[in-house]
Length: 86
Image (cartoon, rainbow, N blue to C red; front, side):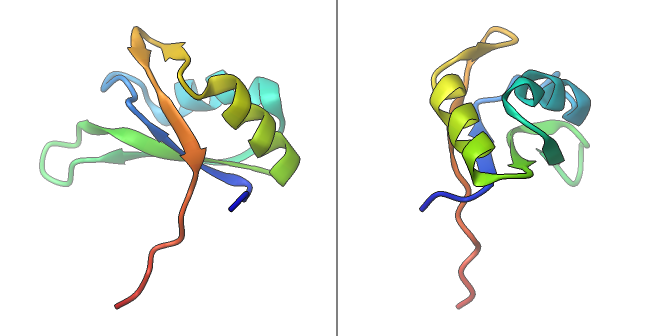
């Protein structure tokens, strides 16, 4: 399902949210970026989320960036799934 929020996997542990935003901003207006960090160490877990102002921008970014190399790592980009409550 296409949404304006993307899941980004395989991120280099050294990237922060601003660097991730800088990578994706060429595809449209980025409204939200979150790099998920380990609660205990504060180190990146290697994945995060990027949200665009429109679905069309998210589609462009997904098509362009899925499988691309960023900071020496090949990233996986897909549409984010909403958490399912049990």
